[in-house]
Amino acid sequence: MSPERAAAAAGEPTKVSALGWVRIVLRLLGLFLALLVCVPLHYLYRVIAYGSPFPKLFLGIAARICGARVRTVGTALRRDVVFLSNHVSWMDILAQAGASGTAFVAKAELKKAPIVGWLADLNRTVYVKRQDRMNVAGQINAVREAMADAWSVTIFPEGTTTDGHSLLPFKTSMLKMLEPPPPGVMVQPVVIDYGDMAEWIGWIGEESGLNNFKRVLARRGSFPVCLYYLEPFWPSEEGNRKTIAARARERIEAKLLETLGKPLRDYAHDVEPIRYSGTKAPPDDPPT
Image 1: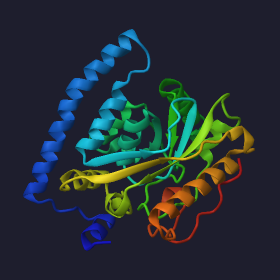
Image 2: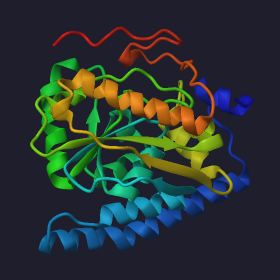
Image 3: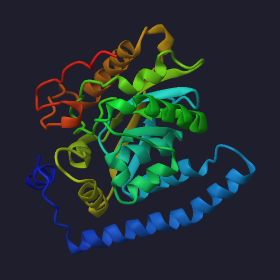
Image 4: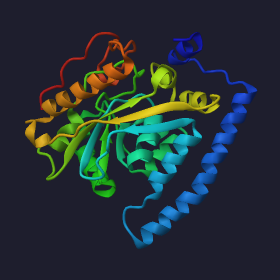
C-alpha cells in the first residue's frame, strides 16, 4: 500500500492536485448532465408503466463517468434472485446496478456520502445500521419491498467494505428474509474484482466517504471492474441462513483465489460495528 493510500485509510484527507480538481468538476458535470436526461425520463416512464429501466441506465453511465470499465462474466439472473457479493467500494453499487438493475442492501454510512447516497436512493437501496440489532424485522421488510420493486436485491454479507484482497466472515442477520425463502427465489453469488486497483479503490479503515469519493473522481484515466456471476442455487435446499451464507461464501472465496492468483489475506482494519478486530475473526452471530 502506498504512503498516500495508507494515510487515507488512517483518516487523513487526501491532497488533490489542480488537475485532479478539474477531473472532479468534469465528472460531476457529466453526472449532472446524465441526471438531466435520465431522471425526467424515469418519472415519465413510471406514470405509464412499472419497473423503469432508467435507474439501471443512469447508474451504468455514472459508473463509466467515474472511471469504471465494467465487464461481466457469467449470466446474472434477471428476477426473483438475491445476489450475495463481496464488497470493496461505493463503486460496487454503480457497477452492479448498471449491469443487472439490482436494488441493494448497504451500510447506513453510504446514505451520507455526497451524491453517491442520492444515486443509491434512485435504485431503492436499503440502508442498514450495522449496530441496530433491534430493528432487524423492519430491515427485512424493507428488503422484501425493494425486491418486489426491482425484482432482485444485492446483499453485501461482510457488513462492510474491504480491500479486495480479503473476505470477511459473512454476517447472516439480513439473510433472515430467506427463512423461509420466498417462493421461486434463488441465491446467486457474485464476485466483484478491481484487479490491481482493488486496494486503491477500496473504502477501508478510517477513510470518510467524502474522501474516498474525491480520490476516485480525481484519479486520472479509467480502471477495470469485472463482475463474476457464479452458479445460482436454491436457498430452500440449504436449510437455514447460516448454511446459505456458508455456501455462497465458499464459492466467492474460490473465485477470489482464482482471480487473485494468491491466498487471501487477513483484513487489517478494525470494524467495530461488526465486531471485527484486525486479524481476529469476530464471534459467531448471536443466537436468534
